[in-house]
Image (tube, rainbow, N blue to C red; front, side, top):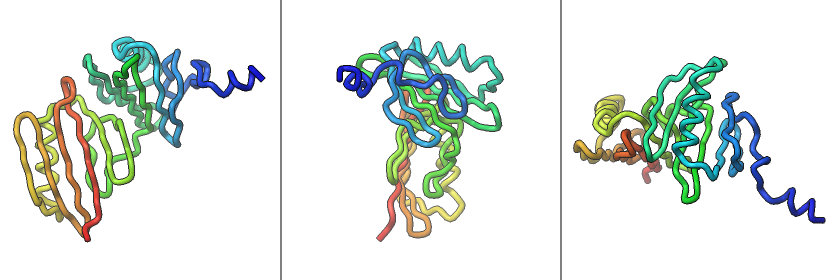
Length: 196
């Protein structure tokens, strides 16, 4: 009976050795969630250590690094191999770090383009959060340009050197896009809704 209890308890051995797109999984780690094309895991090791592992591992082995952002607050890597684009996000947790590996097939949320290069950190029905190594100014300018055409109606827009926020409408749909600093880069949250 003790064996059954031990097998049901998450352990470091529960993590596979490769994730979506064949990206190696940091060891020791524990899988938190596994979805098609996505793997979330945690490790007791620091963000610095886990980020250094991915920086070293993804530099060779046939991976082409499309973008790389490493800060004390986290890291994101976008790599290309085997005709797939994969993102790896490393975030701090209270007692270690969290890693999200995703096959990067997500380029828009309900028609709202996702800034590239970026790494998706959270996704729920109608909302998406991601980080980029690019500045708030650059990402904010991208969305200002995107929403200036293509049938978008800008309801409100606030752009400063430190943040950007857009409320837009198009074809019965509405959304807010918020851009704010994250480490040396930026974080973006998109919230989508249907207009009544």
